[in-house]
View 1 (tube, rainbow, N blue to C red):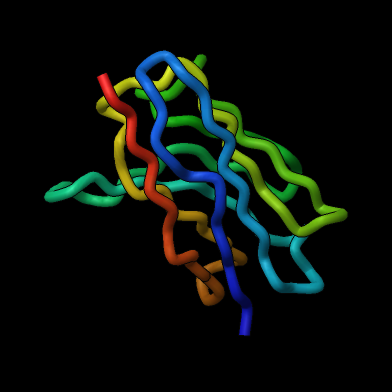
View 2: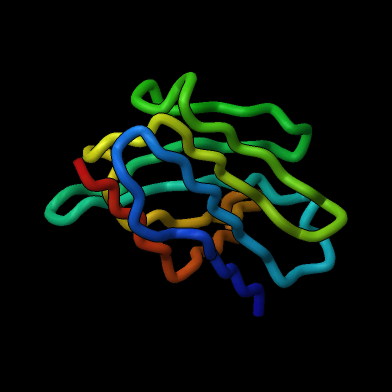
Length: 116
């Protein structure tokens, strides 16, 4: 069973930075497309950023220029560097691992709270 575990959330003031990490328990991590999603209270879960197997990245418009997604295939990890944080970035952030249509795994989420 593939496990996805996030870490790095916390409380930060507006304008600050946080780095989220996610580790995936699989021997074929390099074949997964990895993504970060977020869900604020009462709202749907939204895509934040994705990094594909070939390191191609995609970002939601609301984080472009502020967040950076990266991966380290030697450690089975994906990261989300978040800068210039805003109160509206407050949410639970989830790591997603996907390979094709049949294999998709989620982490338990990590809370990010940005105070104004």
